[in-house]
Image (cartoon, rainbow, N blue to C red):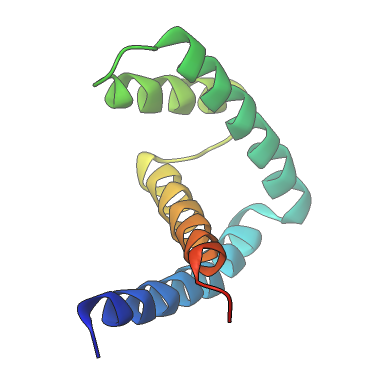
Length: 105
């Protein structure tokens, strides 16, 4: 097996584990309706942070802004929760990106 194949296998397994574990935990902790509402709030806060902090290297400021906005709106999201959500999203996006980039099978 080539390194890239091993990477894709590890990425796929990680994606499944994170999605399979993280989503049920979030549903249990927050409830389905609250998760959907929180996801919308996160989307809006992230877009606002992207507009406010446009320069490179301001990732920490963006994250703090998003956490502040969510907490102001009554969502009890920790920095770790936000990081986990981001990682799960990135893994899922990368998985689909790799699928799309595969040569015609």
